[in-house]
Length: 325
Ligand SMILES: Nc1ncnc2c1ncn2[C@@H]1O[C@H](COP(=O)(O)OP(=O)(O)OP(=O)(O)O)[C@@H](O)[C@H]1O
Ligand SMILES: [Mg+2]
Image (tube, rainbow, N blue to C red; front, side, top):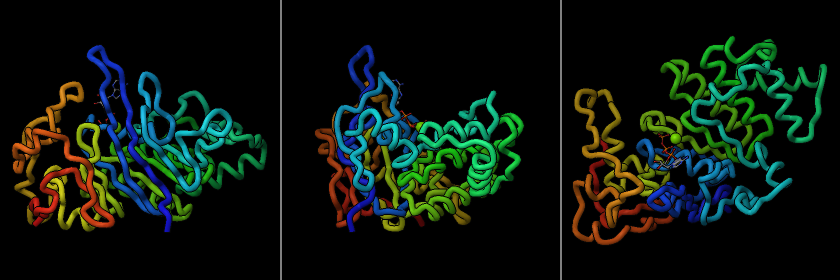
């Protein structure tokens, strides 16, 4: 089977006074249709930048300087003009970080759906528009009368459902949801996540789910990608990665998940994330890594295959790095 989503060497730079920083450096992974990939990593590691670059939503001064992104048979980074406009929300859709605050405060919810349809050449009005919006809202378990309301009249969970419905309104093949539930309480988080997954399965789309919550990823994702300082350091099927993480950073993230028998001794990761402006030579994780040796500080380890499905950027990827208890 050919992979549905292929990201190959995606590299994104931001210019700064001290030269360009690479917020995504050679990011590569492949996913089958219908997969759900958790994209995790500390704040500032490049998750949002990678997502925006993949979907052609990156704003200047950020710039994609290399790589390819393919969704189905669409070469996303090669699209221009009209073809790019048509691909938005059809090929790839983004549920932004803090999406619930991204809704237009002065336009009724229904009109915001109408704008999306109009942008794609479907000028609906009257009963046809109401029916289409009602169906979109029903898909995220909201009543049709939400269409007449303004964002501030809705709860956070409802706004997030609206944001998801808008992103999914043209049945995108790839959905990237950037911390879609992080601002919600735990119960609402679970409900909204279930709705997102139901829709992704109904559409048969591939989902990239960005977040920090490894526990949520364990329950939700089929694949896991771990970013550190702009680079992908591990990628593979979720169960295999959790059972035997190949990168010490992945192992540390997994150990930081509280479990029933480990509630009292959740481990943080000592040290701090390096600034992209001053990356250490060699492996960026080496200064915090319990396993680091001279070779790690000499050269950046490439993201290399462990087997047919797993990749890791660590000289010691073959060793056990402390699977979770
Ligand atoms: N507009 C910008 N201008 C300059 N540099 C930027 C800009 N946006 C992002 N960066 C750089 O890219 C890096 C990655 O940022 P990004 O927002 O992608 O991280 P993230 O992994 O999504 O973090 P978080 O978990 O906090 O959302 C930042 O550390 C910063 O160096
Ligand atoms: Mg982010």
